[in-house]
Image: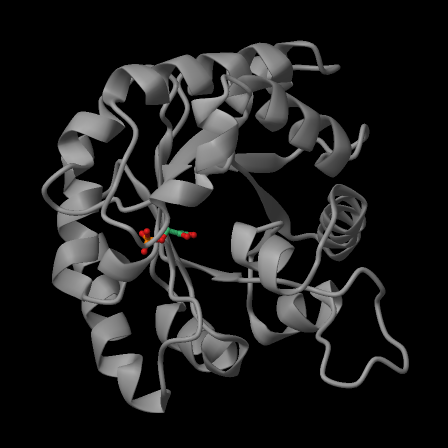
Amino acid sequence: MARRPLVAGNWKMHGLQSASGEFDKIVAGARSLPGVELMVCPPATLIAGFAAAARGSSVLIGAQDCHALASGAYTGDISAEMLKDAGAAAVIVGHSERRHYHGETDATVRAKALAAKRAGLLAIVCVGETRAERDTGRAAAVVRAALDGSVPDDLVDFVVAYEPVWAIGTGLTPTPADVGDMHRVIREWLGSRPGKAGERTRILYGGSVTTANAKELLAVDNVDGALVGGASLKAQDFLAIARAYR
Ligand code: 13P
């Protein structure tokens, strides 16, 4: 089954209203990239504005996190329903920065993935090993366990993002062979789920994807796209990474 590549930009905590010009360039560039799904995940403050600017284009807007509940006395939190209402089509859950800085466990991530489903958002579930886990030969087991714990059994439409923690923001990447090995592990894990998850679910690679390495990394078997951090902040670089699929 052919899976349409997805190139998503995770802007993290970057971007003021003045960043809309950069976003407009992405929307314009998307017209010449019909074969690739492009998504930008800006800070929550920019979601509604970007969604309005993207209307009529193929560019999707994603959020970076959500609360598990639809509403309630949770000062500062934002629910999946609110993100949907603001114009988001997807939400990243379980990014390693959320797991690390906010103490999110697999159970938290699972609850957030369920919230995404409830609200009608595509959940992008992130998993990845630390350097120590890779060095001690535990990377595949760690990723499998994170998937077991973070992906609800009845989640049908979702995306897995494999982001080795040690590759995020460091300029380091696994070799294409290592990426291929891990994406095969994830593909096999998906194959054990009900329905057609094994074939249809996209697996993104994330961690120091740049214009220089995109072609090599995105050509690997079972790499159905990228989750791009730093390099997604510049429209020109983000579009060049997406063009790796041409
Ligand atoms: P960098 O591309 O900046 O390494 O970030 C990757 C990432 O965390 C995307 O979610």
